[in-house]
Image (cartoon, rainbow, N blue to C red):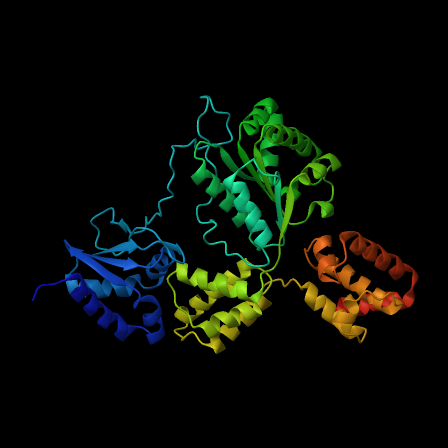
Length: 475
């Protein structure tokens, strides 16, 4: 009987199945497909790079034992990574052959092609000596629109990002400022816009840089007496993406040079994209002339994703990583981790790890344990909804009453306290707080915060309200 890739792999699977837990076998080995056998090398197809890395880290010994048993000491294992970045978006297989004749299983250098269309300058922060040389964009190819799932919490920002990507510098969204709390996808969206522009307009120069690195470069340029070179470099960029622009706060020299760069780019039809953890109206120690320019275009907020979006994010993550998980467990994780996307994806990876390390089946009970530990070990940010509920309960009223238009003193004070704690305990903008607490504007929230501060220092009863609610809301 002739030996085929399938027959070798089937025998390997029998051996592996006898030596690991059923759940681990189902998760990590059932999805693998044997592709070919040549010169003692068995090629297997795995669903993703994540899947490959997990096998190499946790199951390389058993894979080696199984394959050696079938093909002898010189056996090799070749991985074929099936790239599927999102639902329905299938890319060709990428085969990676071991670089030496060693008998070990490892094929460490599994690189996903980044599809760079042009040779690019390795160090984009040195003034090019050759005119029109390409500048490396510093974009992360993993952060695309394909895996930035749309929901109510991000629809405006995502749509504006697509509009900018289609016509950089040619829309009224210039600058485009994307703001929101930690882990909600600001950086991901900024990269996605840049990647989309690079695909559509390969001749345009795109640069992604953090505000901190921009500041450090400026300081170095002053020390080396080449400030003009620094300015010239940034003036040749077609699409400038500055991440975490709030870090320019208090840095007057950096703000001044960025002001001149911004003006030059804007006047010449270049696109500026900014991310920040707060809206322009909430930024402290940023010069007014710079803030006014931030407001020229569009400020789009990313909010915490709703339940349906969280479920979609998790399913997309599992799909891309080639891992299957029951819907009820995915929904449990989505229901209990609400604060941000980074924590959400971290929890699902922790759940996979717990399942494999402890040789347990992925169950609701295991999900509860992982989520409890994850939430406990993560600094929790209370939500505006939670604050409104606690304040309403404290004053023995329902949330609808708290949000109502009534001017009764005790209801107004409860509403002002809710706004005060929302400003203090969340990263939401004043506008977002106002819209969620009775559809007020940011000026009303600002007034509420000042009123609470004043009453706390002049009214003993009101001061007690603040102290009691602080204890109830402490996390």
